[in-house]
Image (cartoon, rainbow, N blue to C red; front, side, top):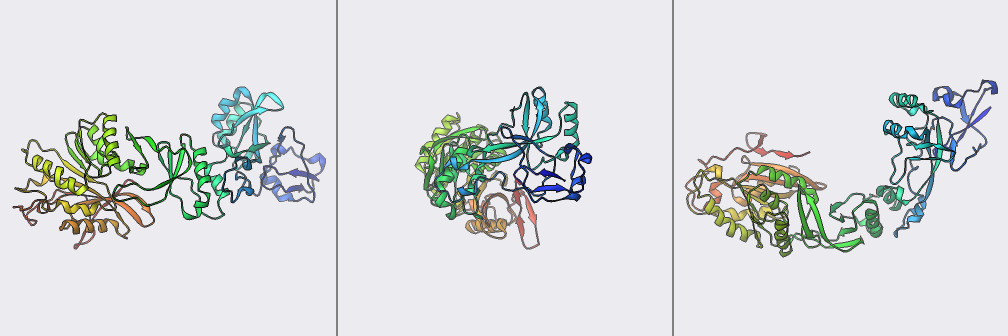
Length: 505
């Protein structure tokens, strides 16, 4: 009877092979699951293999049970509210492959699939028994026997004259070797959601913690700083966004309290005080999408401009920009960022209520530009990114202009952002906007799905040209004979033509 040990910290059962005469024993390096498994059963005793410096030869037998907690932190960190990094020490057994040091670089390229991937772990270490060799750490979930190698990998091993026999190595893990989600999953109450994602705003990690995570908030903040290079401050939103100035109250969970930050988006740089203005990195794609719709020479009115993520790229595209924000801090940083990006000569900046901006500077410019000759007809775009309330501001367009309506091609195009919890969000926002304007937009608008904000809550952008019958106080054109330019539509039935939802996903 021969006793074989199953290593790796998976199932440490000892197995015995029945009916094996000593003279008939096969080399362990050629035993496979097919030849061994039919004759294996639990052994009544334990066999310890001698180890030298945490390294020992490993019989090539596939474990029947893989320990899913192999790379989980120690169980006694559960419930920790103050981070103790020393409590995360743990020793695990991992497979290693021995190779001559001169072939290691080439071998590593061939073994990318099975090499161990852990934060802060050197995958190639010195062989404590042979100075001319190195040990390559392999993923214990992928490599237990020679059978784990693919044909191409075995071919490289043969070419480089590397013995495919695996050995085990006792690897000590510390806090630095665990991922943030592994740390938090081990600490937070079992079965509860784990926060591992956040919005990055320069050096700041912006979290939105749930109630059950609040007792661990300072630990969570510190873990986010530790595990994300460049993050030096972690904050949690403690109130909803204020619809007047579009900022929110926040609490610094860990790290420095400096909220002055710098971000890079779509090749432009923005600086601001994150605690006093609105900035959402999840809107980067949307900022770029609107910019792509503009052509050099076009005119952009940005009603709720913030610190400039729509206005500045538009100015960089040689558009004429009028940018407004009610928040004095946003206005200050908008001016700063225009200079920072060298577009201050292309952007006129205002600090007004959105309605006053539309009925003042916007009205004056529209009267001027819509009166230009046909040869001088830039496209006019109006961006209204205040999803919670922007639709209400559409009323400012009613009878905004006097005089003779211009041709339909030159009417301003509005990009209005809004939220919807409706089962049919496109139809919902279309009807909301139409109700405020007093005209149906069902066949003359497109709706773009920007992002999912929360379960059953979508952020959308409805795009349409303002009907002449709405924009002009005494239009000579009537709704009946007015021709709208074509927009993307999707007809569903004869009674209602629903705007098409266009998504980047």
